[in-house]
Length: 165
Image (tube, rainbow, N blue to C red; front, side, top):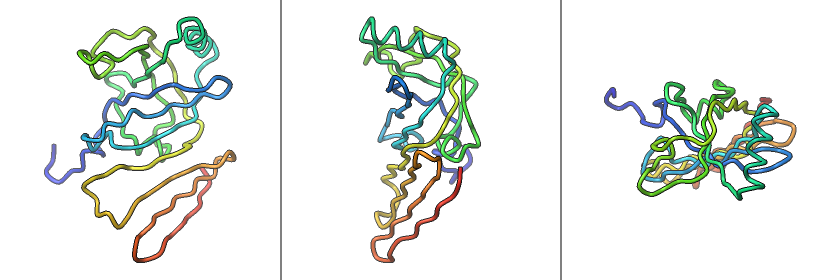
């Protein structure tokens, strides 16, 4: 890794919990001690109908929680999802995390080759312990897909910009 290159800018594998039924959302699994995974991120996503039905049926029948992770060789940064430079990804899904086999891809997935397409960013916030405490950055989207990014500085006021996604 080049010296001074922020780890959160390196493509990685990421794990997300799948929630919802009529609308599907992926909630990023935060790892606070790893800079590249220290983000709150909720995405509304589309999954092809057949794959969606399989996952929802499994949840209903077995009470399964599905953890989706982008496949090896298809790494990306979380920022690339937020900025839409990566609009979707191929994922595998697991129904459990075991402490001996973490992250989820340390075990064989129960479901493979799920095509995930991002619809909109619902919430994004970096949890960066190395940043000065004077600034935080939050990104939210309304149902219309308008992204509002707010940078809040404790002693300088705040700045809000709105852009269409």
